[in-house]
Image 1: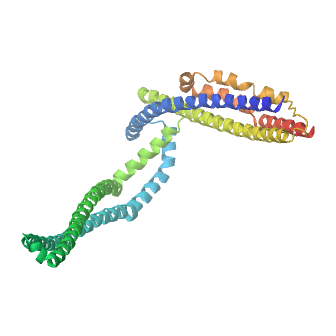
Image 2: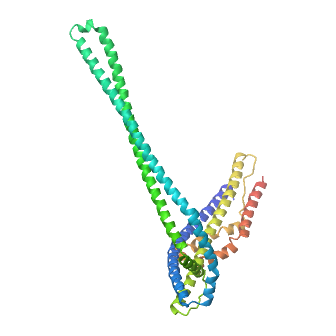
Image 3: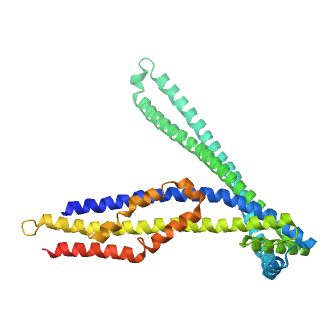
Length: 390
């Protein structure tokens, strides 16, 4: 193939990979959407069953093996709660209280600063207004003087004094204009400062409320952790929840209803693992395809560089001839097939185990590390052979 044909072939392969990545992105979205709904159902069931087992332990209706698993976790849960109790009391609660106090102090300081600013700006405004009144009075006097001296022949007799008065009048008008600007500046400064403080006060109020809520929650948590019986019950519930969340096989129970619930929990946990595996598979496959695409871009840049050099020295260099390796050609024929295989994202999203099962042989076969490396090695040798002909 000529250089431009080879570049088009490489571009077609990249576009096919892009299409497959877009399809897998949709599969990933479907997985996440269905997993979110499933996880909510799983967690609700886990909460309900935790309460059932907790009550069953009090009544002695729990399988001894299940109870032994719970008892095995209890010491660690007690230790974690005691550690949490100390951290809440000695670290978290004091930090939150200090943060709330600092916000309150900052808000009070800003209000005090605004109050101090107001009298100062008021004094400046009053001084400017007084100066303005003086200048306006002087301007009126000058206007009267010029009018009286300009009557009849007075304009001839008083031409010099009229000229001096007019110059002073112009200076007074200029001072009044500057004074008006100063007054506007003072009033604008006050308005801007007030608006900025009011805005920041609202932000500080929100921050203080959040810190206060956090303090209240920590205080409530500490009150529970300080209660020995409440702490022991919480440790037991945490141990129960962890055991139930790890349950993969049904557990017998004297109570048929509890036995059915335990079986249902085991099924949900297996499905959770399937979703995790499916999400990992689709994410890993997308990443792998992105890496292959980047590698093809690098190959295309190498081909493009040779084509450019051949065009620059066409009088001396033979036309390039790229022979696409059969193994590389076969490798890239799989994209459209895979795109069709994963086209029904809704159905795939509901069966994560089936997706993982479909991906596994790909990663062990046509998309294995060995297959990918062999394909790129063939393309590299293709470029070397084409360049060697020069």
